[in-house]
Each structure stands twice: as structure tokens, then as C-alpha cells.
Image (cartoon, rainbow, N blue to C red; front, side, top):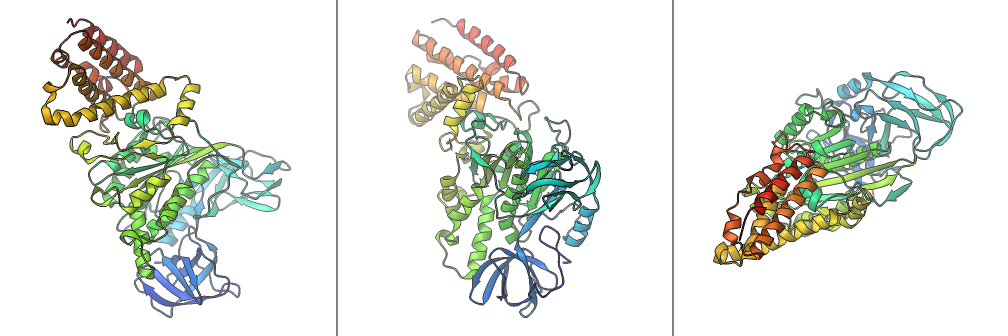
Length: 590
């Protein structure tokens, strides 16, 4: 296995201050060892001769329980374990952007079939970064203030900040030039500041203030931005059974949302799906910078064939990376696919400990663990006074599509938005298969205020009207199945037609379309307004005596094709098609 990387600590010789413990028992990822003075909960432990990374999760009398983050084959009772005296931490630095890492933030690029942590660490240390100072010697700085900037790490400038709890007079500051990752670039109040820094994954980074965000995250997906929007710094769960399009939807959000940095956590998913994500991100042009989208993405790949317990750490690793960039005043999105696989790791370890399980074998603290993860999301004022945000989007994979299973049920309690994927919509090839009847957004009231302030006072009314059209069409669908469309009154037949126009003309969106994979806010509003105006005109026609069958036979193709025939931002083109469609309806006579 070799020595572990800087992400989990460096293997050192035992000293008088660093006691050595003896392994008592090994069962899968669970390792029990003797208690020695100074060991605390969540401390990092290097296990066996290979120095396998592990974390203290329980202390009972003279026995310490450790969850190992590597394969424990070959370990035996009597071998040594080396407590590190500090919590499990990851190395944060400019090398993160564009990188691919495992659940402990060890680089995977060039790792081959088996991870070689020592070689990976050496490769990371060889790189130098172009540092530009932003302060001068003798200047007074506070915690969270930027000391310098690194502009060659990717499309997003990476700032070197005064660490939390620091501040004072700048005693030394490096000049412009290349600096290694672990180089000291400043001395502030007697504290040495380096380009990169360690941070415990389970400890949220401090902020000055948590804020109520009135700004929506633009995902480019109409069904979300129109009906179930999410605020910057909010939380989302995306539950859906196999084949409903979770991974494609999350990939679309990673590609098109207007965040500064994307942290994509592949938590226990299939390796081929993770490979597809990495390939597409590396090939896709970033619409914001013109470079590669992967340049502002941090990919944490902990797939189903990797050590299971590393999944448990991977979501906290992703949150820590996101907070690192958030503290620079950036908007960050964390996409975790999927939290169900993460919960399965918790269940596996609980079964090893012999603890009394809760529902379906999950640990009794499952709800608390889910809440602790989603609580890392927030819009904040950083220690340096900037505004930043972390938005968390977590996929949930309920077995057999059972939305009442524990992970899904607990997650719904703690998130602000729920985008439920419907199997019937997916089988009908309606994508994204977000069920409007089974989804919600608790961010709508604050976002409506934000839209009014931004000059779109009709946003809430438009959303309510689209929702009402869909609800009425769903109500009539069962009647249509029973008695047929011809038996309905004329006005209700038009309501069914309006529901179809909304579904096909607005909510459907092809991830493979060059023009329709992303849709800007103005075009989304124009499409919704166009369909609502046409539906209202159809109602007026039947009220004036035009037979419903005559209205149903009108060719609505130009309206339905407007989403594909116009560019992602072409609201004017949609408006022109709307007027043409209304003019055609104006020629219909009773």
C-alpha cells in the first residue's frame, strides 16, 4: 500500500509523544485497538505496517473502534496502529480545480489500477503555482482576508487567505513568482501561511454570518427553474428509481448551472457512470469561460468497487472542498450521487459493530447524519466579508422506487427542495422526469421576492398558472381513461390540451440537443408565457362556440417546436412564434 498521502497524514516514526497502540480485532472495515492516552474521537489512525488510514469512531473503556478507509486484508491482531493526534483532514489548495480524487482527496490521475499514495503525493508536491501578493509587509489583516492570488490553477482565481482565528500584522509576504503547494508565502501575526492547508473534513469552516438567499441558482433546466427553483445556498434531494434519469439530470446541472465551482461526488456509483461524467466534463466547453468545464470542477470519485467506508468520508470531503472555495467569495454547488450508497456504508459498519439497528438495518443515528451533511449548505458572509454560498444537491436511490424507505423519508425532512423523478414519465420518454405532483420547493416565497427585485414581478404568477394547468390536466386524466376525451365538456377538453402543451412545449428538455440542453431564464419565461397565452385563447374559442374538436385539430407544432427551433437565450424568437400561433387561432371562427 505504501505510505498515506498528505490528505490523511504522513507516516512517521513513533516518538515519546506519539504512543503506539496494538490491534485487537479486525472485521472488514472495523478495527479495534488498545486505548492509549491522548486518543480522541475522530482522530486519524494509521493502521498496520502499511499505514492504512482510519478514523476513531468509538471509545469504550480500553478499546478504541476505528473505521478503516482501505482494504484491511493482511492485517492481524498484534500489529501496531499509530494515532496521529489530529482529526481526519484533507489538503486544500490550488491543485483541486480540474482534479480527480478519491474519497479522502488523494489524486487519482495516473494512479493506475491500484492507488500508490506516496507517488501521488510526490507528484502533487512537484508542481509550482504562480503567486501574486495582494497585501504588503506591515499591513494589518484580519482572518479570512486574501493575502495573495493564484491565477494559473484554472479559470477561477484561487486566493490564499488568512486562516480562521488568525490575523494581525503582515510580517513577511512572498513576491510574485512560482511557489510549491506547501511553500510558506506569508507570516501574519507570527503564524506561517502556506499555499495549501489542512482542514478536518467533519468540521465546518467558520463564517461571519449565515444569510437568507433571495437569488435563484440557474440550472438551465426549465422544469426546475420554472416550478421547483432552488436558492443559492439551499439544499435539494433528487429521489428516483433505476432508469428515471437521476445521473443525466445531475450531469446536466453540473454542466449548465451558473455556479463558480462544481464539486461532483460520485459516492458508490458505477465506475462507468463516473467515467462518463469525467469524459463529458473534460470535453465540454465552459459557456462562462470558453475553456474546458472540467477546469472549474473538482471530481471526487469513490465508485462502487472502491473501499466502502471511504464513501462515508467522501460526502464530508466534498463539503469541505466546497467551503474552501466558498470562503473566497464564490458560489459552489456540491452534487452527491448518491447519498443512498453513502447510507449503505453506514449500515455496513453498524452491522460490524453489533449495535442495535433501526429500520431496515440502518443505524439509529441515520437522520442525524443526513441532517449534518445537508447543514453544510448555506449562503454566507465569509470571515473576509465576501458573499459566498454552498448549494448541496443529493441524489437518492430508493430500492425498487420505494419513496417511504428510511434514507428517502429522512432526507425529505431536511432539504428545502425535492425533485422527485417519476418512473411513468421516464418510460414515456418525458425527460427530465421530474414529477410536478410529487416535488416541492420551499424556496419559492423568498425567490419570488428576489425576482420582483430583479425586474420580473410576473414570475410567481407565471409559476402558479403553469402549476394550475398541470394539476387540472392530471385531475382530468383519470376521467379520460374511464370515459374518453369526447365525453368531457368542451372547456375541460381544452384543459387537457393545455396540459399537453405545457408538458411538451415547456417541461420536456433534451439533454442531447445542442439548442435545448440549456435554457436561459428569459427563454423559459417566454415559453411558459407563450403556452399560457395560447391555452387562454383556446378557452376563449370554445367559450365563443367553437367546437372543442376543431381546436384540438389545430396544428400546434410550431409552438411545441419553439424550444428546439430557437437558441438557449432566444426569448424574442419564442415571442415571434407565440404571436404567429395566436394569429392563426384568431382566424378560427365559430
